[in-house]
Length: 131
Image (cartoon, rainbow, N blue to C red):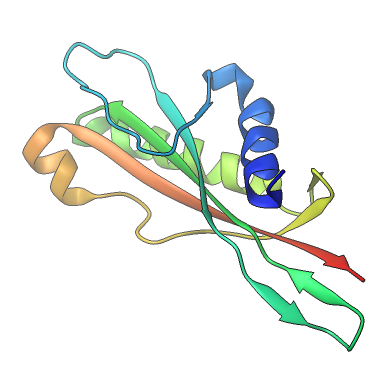
């Protein structure tokens, strides 16, 4: 099976307390939603040559955090997504180690202002080496 897909499954499993689900085409209506939705998406994969006989694989997983919110909710939601991101650093899942956790952007002010939706995407980069 695909390393990036295996990692997405493992990340979703680690986020089971949020009922995280792996989705390839996340689409859903926020109308009436009162809970935080966590979506895990296998985002990309990169291979770098280390030597003639070895390579490094850098799979990337996106973790989307979505919730109906107001501006007053943002500080606690930012704390939530930052804590989730930090919790993966240096963790080994599905044979790879999380080497980076970041956001770009941290959240979408446009979605918050126009739709009352807090949307943040955490980007987790993993590393594994293979002969």
